[in-house]
Image 1 (tube, rainbow, N blue to C red):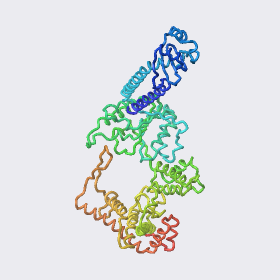
Image 2 (image 1 turned 120 degrees about the vertical axis):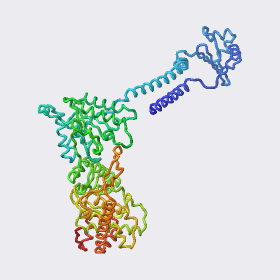
Image 3 (image 1 turned 90 degrees about the vertical axis):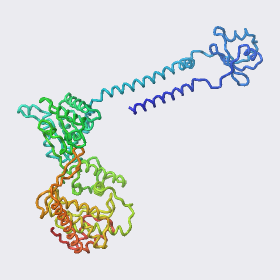
Image 4 (image 1 turned 135 degrees about the vertical axis):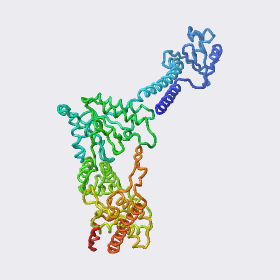
Length: 612
């Protein structure tokens, strides 16, 4: 509303400016000529004081010898010459005056008459028109308030098919049935089969839920309506339900069609959580969605796709058979999928000959499709920053670390002593990691600051992992303690640089005891149950379902895991002190060691990895 008001005010100001320019050309100069009588004009002509006379209708414009101006009035019926002769002007005096008669049909004549009359009417009419227009807009908004902001996607050249979506093989196979139903429903109906009315796409952020929904629409070649669930909810009760009805009605009219509701947990959260009060508007909107899903006729060819990354907080009624009764799980891409995704996002980018997407994919475990797209974009930006015409492998590897930790902070001023402490700290992590059999390989060690980290050691697994063993966790704890032990052993003192390592180690050790059941003393059981605040999706309390005596044992077991990791790291650091010195001194010189350089430095020391 305010935007339209500012726009109308701007138009009014511009209108006044335009009319001001028009008047500046039409209106006579501000110095008004002196008006004289015909008798006085006669005397001036006879005395030779008049230089020129212009006659326009009954108006006489007079220019005197001294260049001054004057005006006079005459009768309309009589001519100027006849009038002057009747008043006693001699023929000789009249011949010395330049006499001109102007036509009264010029545009200035009519403009001078019409504009002063019509201009106020036009301005008043313009103001009333804008007022009525504003009022009409408000009325239209009031009538459209209950309508959904449903958008129809027209893909054109950007049409997406399943082949354009890398990975997600199982998810695509699930959705092929949806596509086939939209194309040939009779095949299913003849067998008495009912296609799922609602399909819920579940996955972490960036795994491709929206992209896969667009691919279903592209494969089906049907109208694709999409809306965010948050757009249903308003501050006025009943508006969300009205918009829901309008959205489903629009999709039914265009059937066969797909209705895609993004982030459905905005209205689909579990009702009656008992905390934070109720939300009548959200619950009424959810009720209307439930009714619309159940209200579909068997012949109606409308598929409702919805996406969420929090299926655990959705209302059970939304997930029962007949509504969103099919869940399609979208996992994070594995190594091969990441390689294919990188190739898709690199299609329109100039690449160097040294690009190896497999190596980039190996450095990006846990990356989603959106992360990989961002990685390729950062690589292109990095190449442009270096004034290159194509992207090289170094740009992509740099982008991996930028996405993980942030940009390099080479300008950060640190003292030589702090730099030395950081070098030994990171060397401690790297040497301990290289000395343990169950630890991931070291890919990079650097003391260049990124984000909040003064330096970092990049460790990545050789193959994809979905399960982790106790020995792997113990090795991880020892690596975390490696930097702390290296500082203490080398300098006889410790710094705050290990604070984040100690925090991560403490949290991991607690999970080993309370969540993973890996404590030999306490046995295979978990401790504590977590409650969530449903409408926020946050953990707010952990129920203590064990005694104080057990709590003491939990603390003892956590301390035992941390102590064992510390002893293991200390043993390696003392045994491989020369290797630690070599890595740290090389870091002080070069600041960064890649995987090959790091392991080449360790070859002379013949480190044999220990089992935990």
